[in-house]
Amino acid sequence: MLNNSLYQTIMRDYNRRQAEAKHAQDLRTREIFSKLPEYETLEQEIITLCAGEARSRVLKPEGAGETSRRELHDRISRLKSRQLKLLLDAGYPEDYLELHYTCPRCKDTGFYENDLCPCFRQAAARRIYDQTKIAPILEKENFGTFRIDYYSETVDPRFGISPAENMRTIAARCQQYIKHFDTRFANLFIYGETGVGKSFLTHCIANELLKSSHSVLYLTAFELIEAFEKHTFGDNDDREDSLYEDTLFDSILNCDALIIDDLGTETVNNFTVSQLFLCLNHRQQSRKSTIISTNLPVEAIQDIYSERIFSRIISYYEIFLIIGEDIRFRIARNR
Image (cartoon, rainbow, N blue to C red):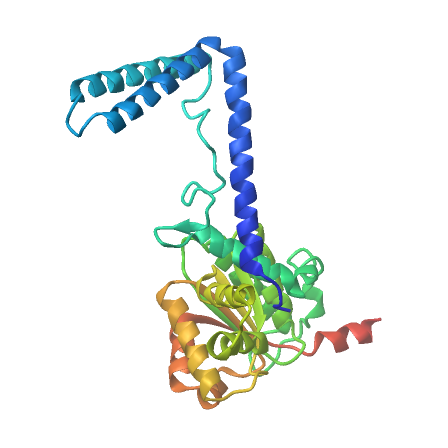
């Protein structure tokens, strides 16, 4: 699953973006030179004056010729003002000849203020997501193909509600979660018996968040722990693979939405518990949304994992119990 160089692939994308931005700028410049010859004449004059100013700084000692340099600077400023007036009078926007980046924050370098730019993290999460087997599943499992008629309308006496009505309520709350994703921080904990539609629902959520350009990382609990193990214990001599593992780990902690599917199917030990807590705690403190699906009842989390993890889920997650029978059996009977 995670066996190629994500980092290098993304950096090639950034290099391509920079080249495309420069090419587009060159085309716009040639257009202006063609339509506004005076603009090109002024540009050549500015280049000549800038070269003269640079030579004066090299040839004259510090402090000497300050008056002439100020005069040069003033002349250049006047020429640029004239260029701007030509652009505006011709109906072009003020920034028409500037470089236009996909991400103005990092100028398509992937780095901002000595750290990864959020756009890099989003690209990394998307690349990792695309390499998983989940991507083609979303074409079939989304809110457009969601079927409430797979759930019984008969009231379950244990809960005082029918599986269908329960699922309508849960689906509606998930839609609200998606609608207010950028303005109202929330986490989701979805549990229930095997086959009741937990994974389908998380696929629906992932699909909607991806469509609204959020970074979504969808991992099974086993894949999540495997990523933790490689990041912590991996002795990888391949620099590109190592960068990939580091980027994956960063995406786990910082993507907009981390979906952990089938919690409880992974091997549980002290390392598993400590890494899961660190992950959930970091994301909570960073206000990054986490969605967990599991067959385990909520009360089992405390026994299998830890009091700290149980406390985080009880305190900071919206908890949904999906009830009903295995949908696969229901579909088979109706054929």
